[in-house]
Structures are given as structure tokens and as C-alpha cells.
Length: 396
Length: 239
Figure 1 (tube, each protein chain N blue to C red):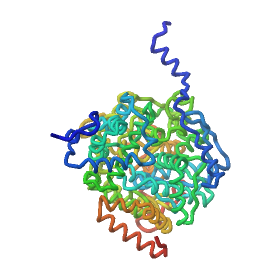
Figure 2: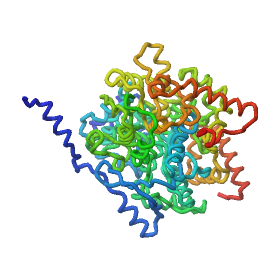
Figure 3: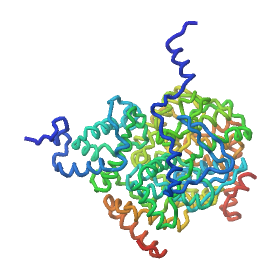
Figure 4: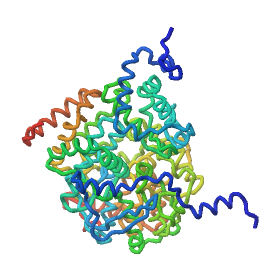
């Protein structure tokens, strides 16, 4: 067989090793140094820990249990099955957690959209939330990609700027709180990656015939890139392994496409008041490219903004006969479905826009029967026999 | 004769279309960008390679270029930066795809700083960009959660499909059907404790974030200030 130039390039890619010249700093040393100097308090990763590989080879420590769920504005606001699925998986795997009421939004969605905040305010909000988690002894698990990225920005600013630390410490003193930073800032999809084999072992639905494309969130792997997960066994370590690693573990048909690295088009302000931009970008650069190159049954992502932009942008695009029609959800929802979660009581797919029913059928889920069960529960609540649905109800 | 910039390589005021704004004002505003403590970490120079533009979603749909932002900042081109402050910065998607810059630049970060200056200084262009956004600002600052379930109304999101109406009609019932107790809410994404809100108000007031609102929307500022001061007074917290 002759060796073509393309084959040479592809064989090199299979042995891909990232050049160390742009390696970002390992913040841990600085963090512990400042702690030793009494400048801040570090909340340690504790209990059973999984070490995962990151972009430049620095191990990241993910705690399996005793997690403080830092919820997401968008997930809780209009994709509630997203966060419910995360909780459900954690319960199924037997890991304890805390769903706190003393958490605020990171406020970064508004900050990136409107700039009606400032560096000190953003840092103080982050530290207040970290301090609230620290006071409970539970370790923060960040549900939102933007919160995760922004908190890492804030961490970097606090570690390098003594004036900012002093300003934030003063505000914290007013609140009776300490300047706390966690040892690691952990995104929920990193936790899912860390326990992916346990999830796969608990899968009750075969997903090997389900074609999946992944859209990774910009704020997960582009903002402060150094401690995002990269795995040599996922895309040869050339793309982040978050989401995709779990898809592989579940045995689904992971498919690639050429605009993998493109943003979803969310735009922060744009998704709310300039949606023509979001819709155009999501449709033309992501969904249509996936359809043409990979023909997925579902797009999985790991941030509120991405689910919103990709899912909601497809409805109006149908009027223009665009090549759309791929359901969009988080990998937490997909994993929960594979583990036998109820598509409506847990995954809450009725809050989504693009048609997900063909996917459910392919996964062997009778969505008509599931919807009838949901409506039955709804009737029980609407006629006053029960006020809320509980975890016991959804697993019944 | 139009007045040329001191440096002949820099843009002239008439070329940027803001000749009526005096040079001192522009220098003061752009000076705030340069003086921000984050700025030295966001700009190292520019190869003019265009990798940031190729990655930028906004560059595909608007007359926007992260490279132009980095170049103007690297040249200290006050005239061009002022034009960008008035026009370009609100087109950025803040996705930070531009961070793949081989020089280590962060054009999206420079835009973040420029936007903060535009808001803090109450530029008319910032007010215009944020018109229609007041409700979101009010929501996040007053409740600590950004997007509440009751915002999902068909008149606001007609392009999101008929499911929006289904959610809106069944909102209270469907929220009560969520198993996590903190999410039985309709006016906030999740239940936020009163004490936590008070702490958030202290942060907004102490850091000057609330003052920034006054520059772009006096009405929202007045409502937020009254709300926060009243709650802090109830809690016996003096600022």
C-alpha cells in the first residue's frame, strides 16, 4: 500500500501529543501557597476521588459523593429535566448530595450579556457561593458551563490580584463569611465522566444503534482551558472528552462532524433579544452540518445555553425548509434515559421543542404510555389529591 | 482641515465617524480600558493571522472582527477603539472562541472590559443595546436567579414553537411535578433563601454594581435600590 500524505497526517494524529509550549499554569501551587499565607481558605476534595486527565496532563480530582449542587439559571428556569436528571443519576448510583437554597446564580449570564456588573461583584458572588458550600461541608458541583468557566476566570483573577482579594475579603467580612475557593472547580459533566462506567453498568436500555453528535460548551473548554478533561481514548485526546467519554461508555454510536469546535450561537444577550443571530448560527453552522455529515438521532451537550440555542432554533428554521429536526438534550438526560429514567417525570422532555419522540422509539421507550402516566400524575395534582410529585413517585 | 491624530498611523476622527466627540473624552474612556487590571493579561500583540476571526460566530453574521479589536488595542488606536466601544462590542457573543489566538490574546475579554466602560459611562449606544433587557437585569439582581419559568411566554418566544404555550398554560402544575423541592417555583429558577438574597444585595451595593445600572436604566435602578435598601434595613444592615 502506498503511503499518501493524508495517511501520514492521520497516523500522526493517532499518536497525538499536545505541545507543551502553551501549557497553562497549574493553579494548585498558587492556591495552596496563598492558603498557607492566610489569604484564603481552600475547600479540599474529600472522600472517594477519581483522578481524571486534563488538557495538559495535570490530574484533576473529582469527588464522587457529598456534593453541593450549584444549580443553573437556564436549566432550572426552562430545561428542568436537565438538573432533575443529574440529581436522579446521583441518587441511583447511591451518592449523597445537597440541593441548597443558599445558592445564587453566578450571575455571569447577565454579566456576559449586559456588562451591568464588575470584576469585584462577580468575584464576590462566586466566593459567597463557595463559602456557602464550604459551610455545609459538601463540595460544590457546578451544573452550568458558563458558571464553571466564569468561576475559573474569577479564581485566576483572585489568585493573581491581591487588591481584588482584599476588596472581596472586605465584602465577605460584611457577610460574616471567609474568602473560600475549592481545590477544584468541578462541572457536572466531569462528574458524569468520572462515574461513566458505573452509569454504563446500570444502563437498562441498549443505545448502540443511537447515533450521537456532541456539541461541547465553549465556556467549558475554551475559557480557562487547562483543567478541562481531555482523554487519549476519546478523539485521540484532541478534543475535550467531556460528554463524548460518557457516550462511548454507554456504547452509543458517537459520530463526528466538521464544526465540532464552533459555538452554538447562544450569545447571552442575543438569545433573548437578538435571536435571528442565534437561530442562523445554530442552524447553519451546527445542526445542518451535523445532519449532512453525521445524521445523528440526537445532539448531546452539557450547558444550558447550548441546549437552548440548538433546540429552540430549529422550530422557525423549518419554515425555511432547512435541514433540521435533531432533538437536543444534555448527556445527563440521555444517560438517565439509558438507565431507565422516566422520559417525562425525570427527563422532562415535554419542555423541549424539537421532536424527541423518534429518538425515544429508537431507544425502545413507549412515549405514549409514558405520557399517559405523566398525565395521570398531573390529574392527581390538579384535583388536589397530592400537592407535589416526589422522588418516590417518579421511581414508582 | 480635519485634525490628524498625533500619530499618523492611527485612525483620524473623521474616519471613524465620531468626529463630534472630543479627543479628550475618547482618551479618557479608552484609558479606562487600558487601566483595567485584567487588560495586561488579555493582550500580548497580534500576528494578524485571523485565527480568532475564523473561530468567531459573530464575525460570520455581523461586521465584527476580534482581530480588529486586538489590533486597535495593540496600536493604542483611540479613534478606532472608540468606534468599537460605540458599535462593535455589543455584537460579540462572549463565547471566547477567540481564545485560540496563538499569541495568547483574549479579544473577548477586551470586549468585556470595553462593555463595562460603556455601561459605567452611560454611553447612549450601551443604553440602546440594553433596551429590552431591563427585565432580565431586574430579575437577576433582585432574585439571584436569571431566567424564571414564568418568562417562558408565547408572546415573548413565538419562534420557539408551540411547546412554549404548553409550558406557559401548565406552568404551576408542571413545576409542582418536578421532584427536586427547590424547583417548585415559578417566579425564580429555584428557591433562594431570604438571607442569601440579602447577602447578594450587600454585594451589589458594596461593589458598585448597582450604581452601574443607574447609568443605563434609571427606572430599574430606582426600583432595585428601593427594594435592596428596604430589605437591608429590615435586616438591620447598615452600609
